[in-house]
Image (cartoon, rainbow, N blue to C red; front, side, top):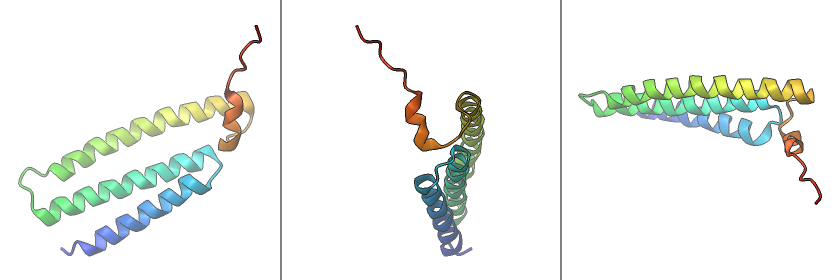
Length: 106
């Protein structure tokens, strides 16, 4: 298998995810972009594992851990976004700075 095809696809996926993280204001779209970036990393790990013909399949094992990490991240992230939406009525990332509590004047 040629390494170029999955590496280019992984770079494109990572680039789209990075653009989504930097350009989007909706928190759910930011979480989806982070998931795209993690999928690109997983694809890269498996592609290099197959290309190097590793006997222990370490790239595939790391990809399984990455999938578990991504599932935990999306679960906790979605819970936080839902709580912010209930409290503020919006999921706009640029308005999250308003969540800081104001210090009482003493």
